Amino acid sequence: MIPAAFDYVRAGSAAEALSLISEHGSDAKFLAGGHSLLPLMKLRLAQPSVLVDIGRVKDLSYIKDAGDHIAVGALTSHMDVETSKVLAQHAPLLAHAAGHVGDPQVRHRGTIGGSIAHADPASDLPATTLALGATYVVQGPKGTREIAARDFYKGFLESALEADEMLTEIRVPKMNGAGWSFQKFNRRAQDWAIVGVAAWRRGSESGVALVNMGQTPVLASSVSAAISSGASVADAAQKAVAEASPTADNNASVEYREHLAKVLVRRALEQASA
Amino acid sequence: MEIRVTVNGVEHKHDVEPRTLLVQYVREHLGLTGTNIGCDTSSCGACSLHVDGEAVKSCTMLAVQADGASITTIEGMAGKDGSLHPMQKAFMENHGLQCGYCTPGMVMAATSLLKENPNPSEDDVRIGLEGNLCRCTGYPHIGKAVLACAGK
Image 1 (spheres, helix red, strand yellow):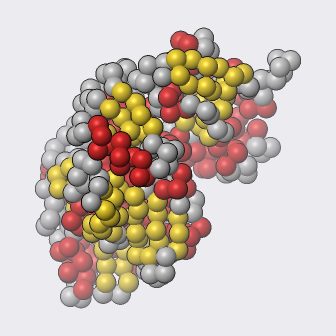
Image 2: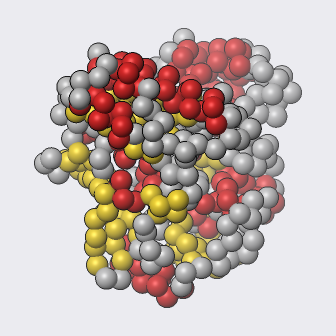
């Protein structure tokens, strides 16, 4: 399958990328690793008239210790996130989850920023960064702004990003030794999660987010509220779907997804509490 | 758009449409048909080749994204004298193929895997090749071949 024809321009820097996207209007799209966008374009589910290739903006590929958080450049590949020693020490949940995206070939090309900007509720890293309370840094013609992950996801493949804005950095609070777990339930290794759970816990504090349990990644606040009020893991897990609105597809009915979410949240919290 | 790439050590310059997929470029512009197209949806791994030393799925990359890169396809694995790459030899000696359709992609993914993890366990090999499907289900021998190539 070959995508519909488009014009291709290449940006050498973040500033140039923003100028090109403004110039080409709302029908232009950024191309990073292309592992979310190109499959949609091949199926003609997306048909941008212009692609602004930001894949060579190397100064947006980094993982830095920034004191209370780790700063991850938006163009950092999944493989670099997975194998980062800094993340292994300070945000191991993110590194581990990145290792579950697609397969090694996909992780060589796909980027954390591309995955988050694509805002697919079935992707692993939107929910994982949501659970971790991450902040996304966005640049646009009016300057830089920060968007909390919990305010970012607006609908299926829709985010708070404006058409002329670019996600440049993901700030992940240090986990400071919190227990964590990433549960991904799928039929084949490289598939999207039928349901997934990213969770961390430090005493009465916790963060739990669900993959593929609605139109957006879902922050399971009711589970965390139950944990902080002293509920057992098993009881807290019963609140797993309070914020979710899953849909049925070939892999699972709504009822099955809800069942999976409760089971996987329980397993995740057991692991994170151990 | 004009692109310049080095493929199996040979420099090429071509004018391509931006929508040209890398696998299409390699097969149709360069005539290197050893790289197969399987699912065409970045699931099966038949189209795996190396871009700057890393295995990628060339059905999900544009040729223009590879501009300036060094690419290795299955045709570039054997020595100039025709001697097989150690991974190819290991696949042959361990019966790591049946119909052979997935083999070029398997060999490219497996060499990339050993570069990143030269001393893998059997599980590492199985997980490391999760992006490559063999519809003959010859996975045990493929795993054996990769471990043999790693000296195990």
